[in-house]
Length: 373
Image 1 (cartoon, rainbow, N blue to C red):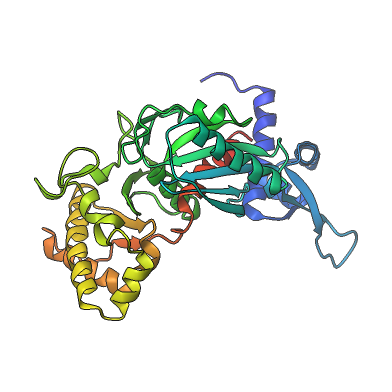
Image 2 (image 1 turned 30 degrees about the horizontal axis):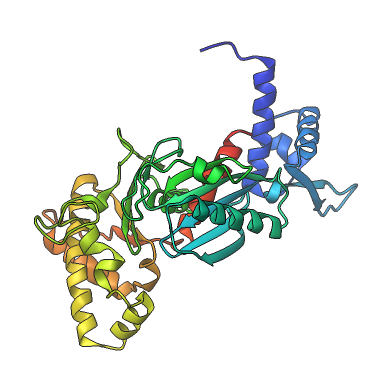
């Protein structure tokens, strides 16, 4: 370990003060000094620097019984903005989040995916227009994360497996060439898991299942998503559930994707809303379909639980439709299959299922910015 320099100490104090304000919302100069055991001149110097950088601002004054009221300092959430773009077969969803992870703008465009330059240019134009119409300045935008239904390289520069929409081998330059911000591809299920981690700081080990039209998964260990040696860690959608079963888009058969995704539950022209409305109204055919679906999902969840013995979080488009009663049935089915007498609940619904994919894509840049302060 090298020697710690004066520059390192100054940088550390700058970071400590910003992070304390970030966590505690609003503090006076004296409170910062007390909590961090720093001198007032050191705190003052760093507050000036943070204010000049546009990272913090004076947020009023604290009440005082005697003497002058202390000035309150707070962070500027919109000092940096992350943009997330979810690319789907028939639409593009764009949103922005600030440094606190709060959504500060969202728009959706109907656009049928095509693997050609005209599509990428149109998508990039939608993003540029969204940034301009939201009133964000160029210096505010930290970067743009494009969430895709596929596996990407670790640096997000290329899609290495994208059979759902046929964009395997696509490079980020197809989009970044039309934009003036840092861009990267991100696996949609990993984005959803990142949103869950952001909102649940207590989450350490879990398997995240994103149940959308297609299935996706992420393995969380020690509060981090684990990508594995070849960057397809957590791709549980292609675990074989039923050998020789339904054909999967990956070219194999019997994958979890073909039994546990939304597409496996609803008919082609049916929406989740229509399905669950009929189910709650007692339609026998929909109840039969849902029971069969839960049978397959419980087998999959039990297999995953056997491997990691941790919580399983269900997110994606399906999550908002599932009730407490549905979860009880799912737990019962899993316990029937389990080899161990584990009767504590371990399957939970995501608390942030809506927009979790584009939010997670934008948080990639927010996190990077905060880590660099």
